[in-house]
Image (cartoon, rainbow, N blue to C red; front, side):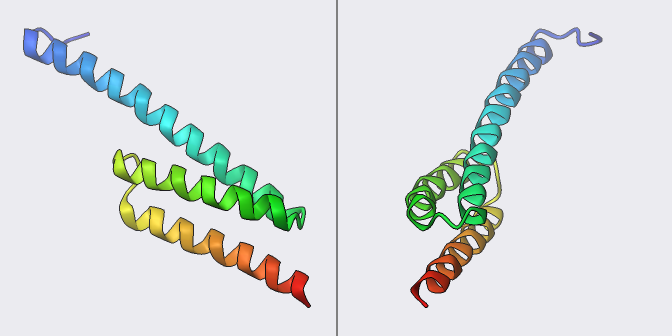
Length: 93
């Protein structure tokens, strides 16, 4: 490690902690989105509808923590809600 100043060493430790937190939040978010997509592919309307609210919550938390940009979160929510709505519309026919 080429960092020699005390403040630089502290900042480096802080950046490593933040990186670990961000990776954890991103991993949780991706897992939740994957579960929802699997429910959509399996045509499981009830499970998809239940997971949609949880997924929205995780996306909003990731945006709030600045793990992902707000536009990215909005786009993901829009696409997922459209897929679940399409699933419900297909089942209603």
